Length: 279
Image (cartoon, rainbow, N blue to C red; front, side):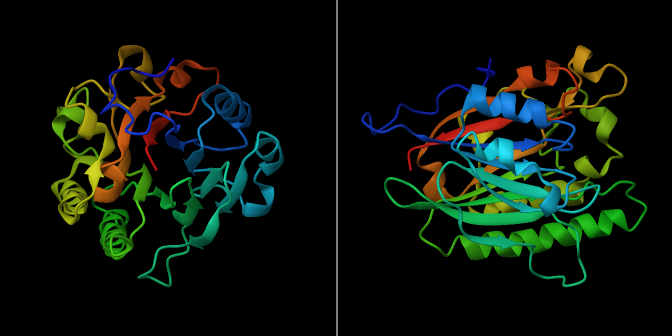
């Protein structure tokens, strides 16, 4: 069952309308996790899903079983690693791939689309931020540069009238309470001041961390490493975030972490995070 650590932010203001449920999940290989994905889609039935690390080229993405469950599919894939996708029960409009600012960057880490709702539309982004490790290699400056480009796009999206949802694997531990053992992450790119400051800059633009909008509790994690019994010991971190524009945050109803999926056979090392919005 979903974690109830994130309780309802507020009751629905529209009792005659069902909130739109938007999820993010780093699937860590859609082919390896295809059965788990379809099982979870049947179980949770989210309206929109942002997937990361699909590790599949577009033409090899297993769209058919997902489409049979009633979803439209848009992907921005890459062979063997990276890759993002959007699944939606409603049509995906104005699909945009890649993140502006570096024409030489061929990593498949960004896809966005507009989804019409009963009252208007939402702009949804699925993003997979670079890991950045080791920090003494070019991977860390690439992470920071990518975050700067993300901030520029996030600011531009705020100029629209649509609710904006930036959902994905941010590869950032925002605060010490977002790690079971924060001291073990001080040398990691996910917890460096430069990474955290850029994540904070996203908040300073006006974006709201959906999880923290409903709960300030510690012990809420979305990732457990495969190594050293991290899952069994609950040595987790929270790096999968749903960031909401002010218009979207005003319509936030609930946030749920589907922690139970980490206990499934051949699981992803991440779990889904699902927000419900009155949109």
